[in-house]
Length: 174
Image (cartoon, rainbow, N blue to C red):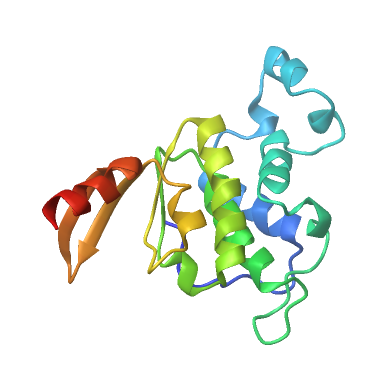
């Protein structure tokens, strides 16, 4: 679960934060890779970098701040949208089948939500994993990023199915 709040250790860099999360979530680390896998992973491992971390940094748009300190929420060294991406990146270091993001768009403005969800969409397609998010009144652009929806009204499901079928469904019931 990707938490609603972006709490990070302020004295770590973005890269160190992701590396720490990776070590906490995985027991199978590059030092355990066999020679064949080491050859496949290539140069990143040769210079001591974990290719999965490098992919996550790139896909979530954090490469340019990878070596900056995170800072505290009251004195940040990275922007709010980068902190939100970092929170997601921490979870993506694991090997989970499903990822949950709670109240994604309450922690960020619409453009940040759109950019983050676009990155997450690419990431989940590449990794062939499931991603679920709770959103409140998303913009049309954010809404269009989803394949399937579960729409709630006062805690009750009012629609569940493909995104493109939601509007015709509501039009059919008036």
